[in-house]
Length: 525
Ligand SMILES: [Zn+2]
Image 1 (cartoon, protein in one colour):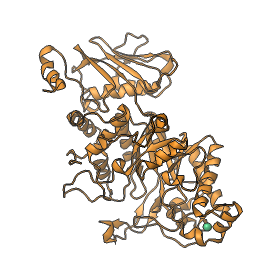
Image 2 (cartoon, helix red, strand yellow; image 1 turned 180 degrees about the vertical axis):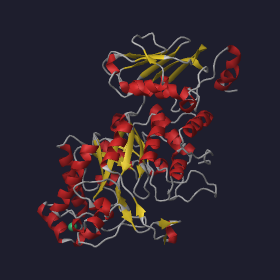
Image 3 (cartoon, rainbow, N blue to C red; image 1 turned 90 degrees about the horizontal axis):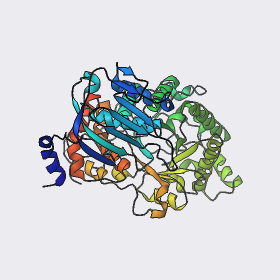
Image 4 (cartoon, rainbow, N blue to C red; image 1 turned 120 degrees about the horizontal axis):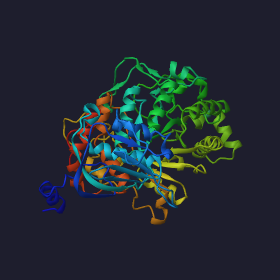
């Protein structure tokens, strides 16, 4: 018999409580005898160091209508640890004794992560029922993540999702200690963010006259007008909502490809002047921003100027993937740019374009992330590479001294099938089972140990061509994103059977916050 199972069976007899089913698993958890009883009228104490931080709201939410104490003797008490060299900003220690719940952390981020652990120890529907009188096992948890970038992405362009859905998406991320939401806001099939200087981006670019239906090969379309966008007020609301949950929102404004919606609104930004229509179907399109036209660059800087006022994130994602060079090859302006800048070919023109935008963003205190195609024709000096066509992009970036984020299609694309069951809803293809996600190693074999610090972390990507409804998105994301959260927090997948045993409790928690999930555990890799 496995030792863990033996202890679990014996625990109630010995007066031990059951180990809590936490996801991601904490680094170190020691279970003690006795229990803490969750009472009515509990108090909490938050030290002055964290007084004006969002974690206090979360503490307040945990005790709800109860009272704030002015001393560390409160039922839930937080200690601000003195910062020591090499401290980890997300470190926390959570100690539960029969008398008190104590959280110690260097930063409010650490306090928040501890709160999420504590939240997972409460009854799954506790937020709704606010029951009292249940017990928590006495434990000492010491915890911190392995990777500083723990991301989840969402494409709101192929299909559009309302603010309420985005908030629920962020709630589920926060519960699993994710810290980056990559928001894919512009595409061939729709422009989704209000830009005040260019109203046609959303008046025209946010709407298409039909959508592709069924499998790609069928080339079947409906003719329903489809679209939507987020106003700047809604964007601010979401960014603040995420901030309160210690999640950074990184916007993606795609360039120079995947730009047909913008070109439909402003055809003069293209090489041949259009006219265009917002794409109904999926795929890659030849019409892209003209890299030889100075007014196209000026337009993108205007757009980014407004984006920067909405997103305080260190990183801005500027795409760079899947940009056909067809139009550039025959465009006099693009060819002239190649000549005047002394570039070798259209690949170097793309590189020039991305570096131009990067420099502009760098002078405004931001760094760029781009898809791994930005390696072609030379990498912009401070760029972070998001490696999606396998792990090679990240490996090449690290060798060049650049940061990288792992998001290889296998197994980080949650738009792939998760089960081989014939009843699965139509997906883009591929197969990434829960177990494959759980066994993912973000530090691939091609990353030399001396370069591993260049790998900031990894991300699950959610492209929504085949996901029309909120429930369908969540079905594809959970529980695979729960598996990835544990990989990123602990640094590697652990024992899959152990993870599976903890999953039913996680699913109960998702259900309690209204998040759908795939109830099966996928099929074997
Ligand atoms: Zn051109």
